[in-house]
Structures are given as C-alpha cells and as structure tokens.
Image 1 (cartoon, rainbow, N blue to C red):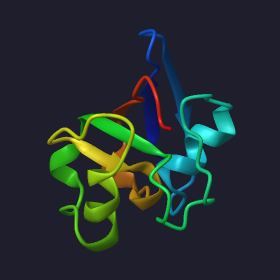
Image 2: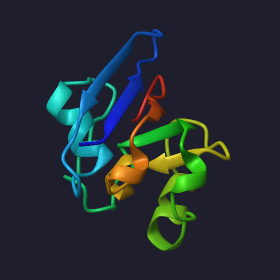
Image 3: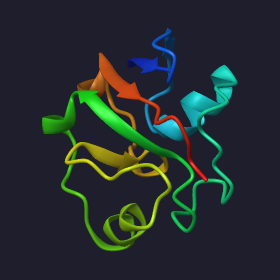
Length: 106
C-alpha cells in the first residue's frame, strides 16, 4: 500500500496508506481533510480537489485534456506542480507521494 502525506494549508502533515488503484482524492477524503472538497466525486468536472505535488511529480503522467483545462479555472493559483487529486491513481510506484492542499478550492 502506498504511503501518501498531505500538507494542510496550516502546515500540518497527515500521512495515510491507501490501496493501489484508489485516487489521491479518495485518500484525502478518507482522512477527512477539509481542504479537498471533491464536489463532483472524482469525475474531473469541478477542480475542487486541486493539490500541489511536492514530491513525486516526476512519477505522474503529464497533465492532459480535461484536467489541464480545469486547472486553468481553479480558485487556487495554478502552479507547475498543480494536479487534480482525482486524476492521480495510486500505485506502489507512488509510495512516499507528498501533496500540499491549497488554502482554498472554491
């Protein structure tokens, strides 16, 4: 099971293990993290699960399609390491992933 660390807007770190095949969004919701709203339930239509990949970005496929378009319209500033957590499918290769939650989603 890959281990993922979420950095909250106040700097607190929360680490969890997630099942291979789950999304980073699901892992954040299972921890009850307020900063990941996930209004669309992971269907890549709302961008309220925007995160910043602090460690492990090189292991992810490039941003493309709907994710790319949605990141342009988010409340939080789009950065080079911005991703939608619903589009990050967890694998053993992503063990140690570190994701920072923006200070706002909407």
